[in-house]
Image (cartoon, rainbow, N blue to C red; front, side, top):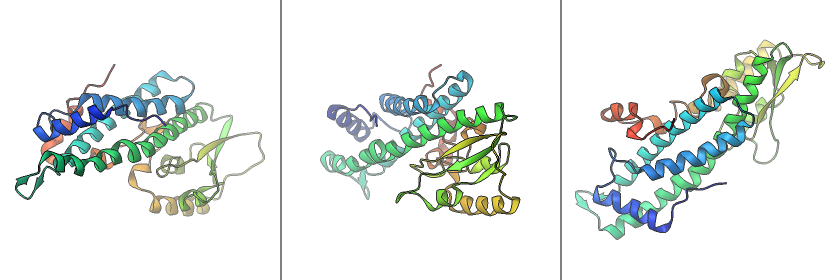
Length: 254
């Protein structure tokens, strides 16, 4: 998986910038934002496959907004480690404290976000194709990879069949959790299969939604978003609302 291409010197510069106040919530590190969006948009492009320029642009714009919000939250978390009570820490102590925060955001979290972006982009294109040709692809089947890593959500959804336009796909389309490996299979009208009963679909939907984090109750092919506003990164203190509306003063490329 691609990673943030930050050298040790750049990481040190980031830490020093936050420590000195050169980098703050109103002056976020543009290069970190650019690197984050580049990694996640590469996943969108791989998952998207064929070109639907309008949808691809919408998904990429969402990634830029997500990356800006992530950069804001990362700097905010690091800033919170500057002091021990009212006493500002020595730089070496601060640096040691924030190293794990940096790794979490730019390694562990990023890896899960990358997989989510790839799966969501693939689902967006697949779902749009099914809807565009719904007279042929009359139904969709939820397909899970069943092994020791399969979540209880995906185990329950596995094999579910519903009409292409059924509302179950508005919230139960992959990914349904971080690192979800599932997909929707298009079923054409010539296959001898029937959709699950309304009662069964309702039961499966209620179970899945009860286990899902709010951010995953999303179909990127409908919302044009990889990460919707329910993601914690988009939750900012009220005083930063106007900054968030400006994408944290980080430019979205045209």
